Length: 133
Image (cartoon, rainbow, N blue to C red):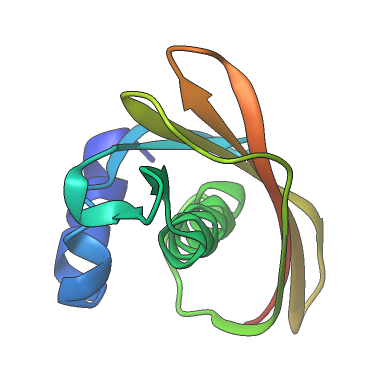
């Protein structure tokens, strides 16, 4: 699977409000998937920091694509659980999400994702999710 294949899947299958985050697939493999979004005024809440909803949506999207990378092809999955821990306010130019599958079974897939603000390189959130296959 290539980043372009994953990008096309993303653009063809995700809701317009997720695509409004302008996610770009930078890397996808069996080991990890990396997405990035620009930080725009539309994502900022009071105080000029990125809203938690945008960060959570990015993490969920990255983990869905990580499932496809793990399996070598995109397949439908549904979010069963999603937990996000916010570590610090997110600001800067962009957010990078690095996601991986921690365990994949026949019916359930367990994932985690780290979100980093750039250019500072500081972690801003960690997320875990379980998906039904």
